[in-house]
Length: 261
Ligand SMILES: [Zn+2]
Picture 1 (spheres, rainbow, N blue to C red):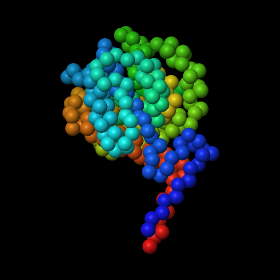
Picture 2 (cartoon, rainbow, N blue to C red):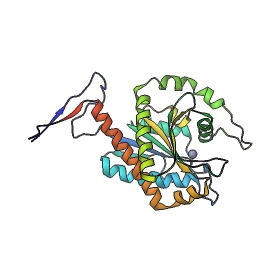
Picture 3 (tube, protein in one colour):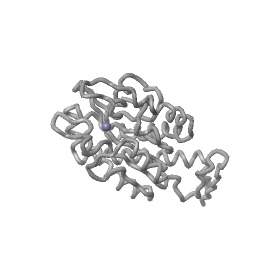
Picture 4 (cartoon, rainbow, N blue to C red):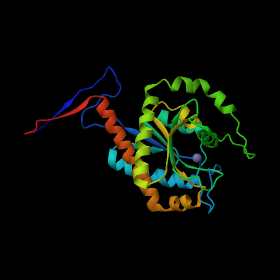
């Protein structure tokens, strides 16, 4: 015989009080990077980041709806331009519990490869992370120079946000998704990193940005263009979200007691 004891630790997580069969994650917003005139990075064979991110996001939405029985919303479901700020505002307006922004990486060096998962930070983990954020923030000019002006504008928001519980949860969500992607795809581990991404800056819920591979690497571009591989990535991200959900439940005191006879 099995007993379930549910302890709702309202002192620590006052808004996340649920019964044992209920998920603490009710709404997930998935953000397919770029769109419309903003193609994102383009691979040597012509694969555009905006198309790849939309394909993965749609598949991920279907999988998460099936596996978590929650509302899953996309910031865009077609090829349209949406500003970075609008994407986060959409997640806040819909009271999302998680925000997952999907991207593909770019590098001048054709051999660059692997998977990176980011969460928000005032300072970038390293120079490469700083460049990735600059690219995704649309701060890299056609001359290749980086303008940091936009980051100055959001300094105050970043400073407030990194103090919140949601931000601490972002680190855990990033680690969980990253581990799953590496396990399922066998991609090279470039690590969980931090950088000042505008698209994550205004989010009030745990939020991450996943760079699923290098579209500028001919081998990775070919792999990323395959539907079967896109499905693998979507399943891996979903695995990571489910593991994160279990951690949330454990933290809130969801305890399973087995009688042992
Ligand atoms: Zn991107």
